[in-house]
Image (cartoon, rainbow, N blue to C red; front, side, top):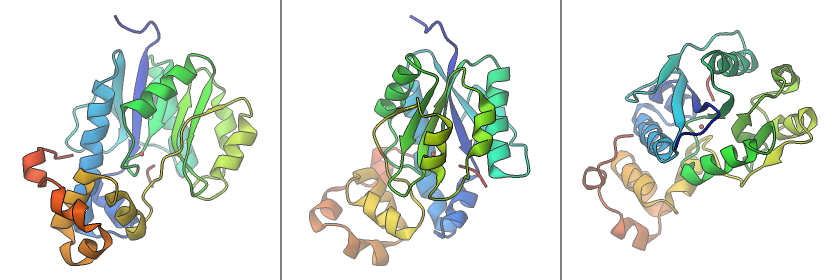
Amino acid sequence: MSHPVPRCVLLFARSDAAEARAKGLGPRGAALFALARERLACAVAALPGVDLVVAGAAGALTPCHVLPQRGATFGARFRAAVEDARALGYREVVVVGLDVPRLDAGCLRAAFAALARGEVVLGPSPDGGVYLVGLGEADLSRLDRVRWLGRRVQADLAIAWPEATWIEARADVDGGADVKRAARGDRTWAAVLRTLWPPVLAPALAPRMVASVPSPRAHGSRGPPAV
């Protein structure tokens, strides 16, 4: 049965290569974000009545819609992406990026469940940012109060929407240390990392994890904000 409210997950993303450069991971790091892209597509596919929309680079995905990013600043582009998704008819929009390895269907399901009860849902990251912003009929002008791309994002969003629902925290990837940390608890992520930087990553991974991860080829994997 389809959901009565048109809903979408809006991937606000640059290309995999640009994401890797921004995180200081070099050209080979693009494979990590290709994997994150594929995981997101699988998570969205598990949610009935939810479309995948991309604002920015679609990569290997085949979303329902691809929107250009427009605006001179991150905040302007973010707000414009939500406005463009609304113009397509979506009334519940959950915005995510590519830099959260453990973003899964459970997170997205919790976000949409919260939007059924209120206008705004937020997913916090430990560094003071957010990995998910869900918006129903909320006033988008409040987004202009947020100082994006810093440790004040959570606080500014909380001031803009004190009534927002907060869901479970998820760590994002801002550099090599975050990549290694994610690999310790994620077999597929660790397997991809071992093919990219074996001399660097092997000491960082528990021996039993390294020994037990399947190869990326056997797993079949190819693949949340923008500049």
